[in-house]
Length: 249
Image (cartoon, rainbow, N blue to C red; front, side):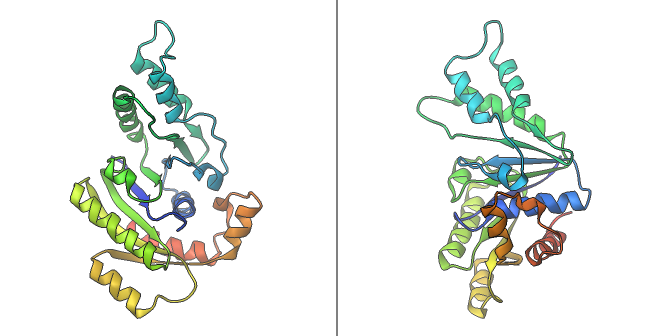
């Protein structure tokens, strides 16, 4: 079984950027093979990684629902073929994008097939990193389940912290098989105030650490440069690596 980490949190907290940092960290430690999964309905992990994506699992599901399975081909073979086509490969990791969410109508058959093939696919990797959409919808729909770590990313805002606490609570209530819930406070301008640390402690959520705000990430994004190319001596990267050192086998 792979060591798996799912990322969650309020929108705008930098989940996808942290996902890229995490993949960069695993590569630097030669902890491979790695499967990156973009489960956001508005996917952009490929931009952080500098990869081109031509096909998604959502596209395959839509085609199956619309009856676009070629004559003489069973639905399970069709989904298996499309799953293989949707894998974007690099030297250090593979990326698969879930794509558009479910629309109207029944997707039960397509989703069942996709879930089964995804489960088989992840068995080929030592590490699986899943970047989820903002909020808690993916948890309430059980898209995120059976992960070693649920990495909850927040900023220093009260709303961001509250969203993180609610995600932890919902994950526990749904009993979705999360080994640990770890909080990462991103975009930190200064040390966390004592009152914030107290709120986190009272929530029972493990604090993995903080990542400082860094304007270089904004500049990389503005210029269309993949942030995975950020140098390892960058302060935010170094802080993230220290967190990952603590929480990853």
